[in-house]
Amino acid sequence: MARTALRGRLSPRLEWRVATLAGVRQETPTALTLLLDVPGWPGHVPGQHVDVRLTDEDGYSTQRSYSLAAPADGDRVELTVQRVKGGEVSEYLTDTFSVGDPVELRGPVGGWFVWHPSRTAPVLLVAGGSGIVPLMAMIRARRQARSRAPFRLIHSVRSPSDQYYASELRRATRDEGGLDIATVYTRSAPTGSARPPRRIGPADLELYGWPPQFEPTCYVCGPTGFVEKVANTLVGLGHDPRRIRTERFGPTGD
Image (cartoon, rainbow, N blue to C red; front, top):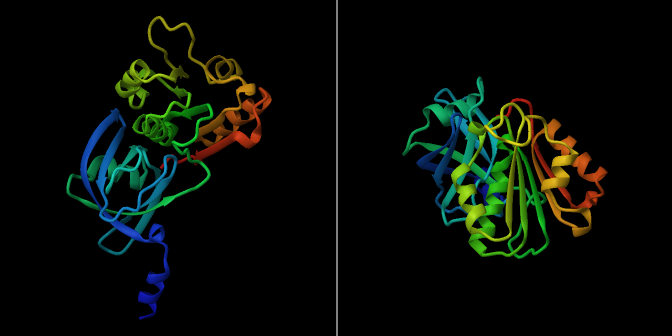
């Protein structure tokens, strides 16, 4: 009785729900997008994330947080998962998890690192590797809402094979007005690239980002070191710290 009463007071977003894998898309050699059906899903805002819980037959459980990769679409949610060697959750989700299998989700979580399609101010998205996932949800939400808010995305990746959503972003650049996309490479660049491989720096943020006087909202997502460097650089370039929103993941990447 006590547990039932407690559950009745919980927010729906704090309850664990059973999701079923409906399909997958290969994004990179080590990353998959999982298409999950979640009955009773309450909806979400681009930039939010969910907790994923795995429970073994012996009762052992573990959980990780993953960003939502697409805007709300009824009971369907999308998660893009990067396989990390030794990561017990990511290895299961990318190697073992099969269509029709269940998994537990809780969420959506987060209210600061979000973008609402009603906003019209310029937006700068800066992603390091898999940090593009919540930013892609924002880009997709912009398209879905037919928003005219000007967007610029800078995606830092190791090599061309590490680009997430490559074909979709190429189409978006061609077909969607007001969306500019730049990819910077840190280890190997495509043949003929004018920019040699190196880490993202002030020159990249000045060239591909917005001038501070345009007062853009800046979303930065990626590994902790990347996020701190980019955020500090944006402040050094004159951007208002109050307009810089950050999301980071730890060293395991899982």
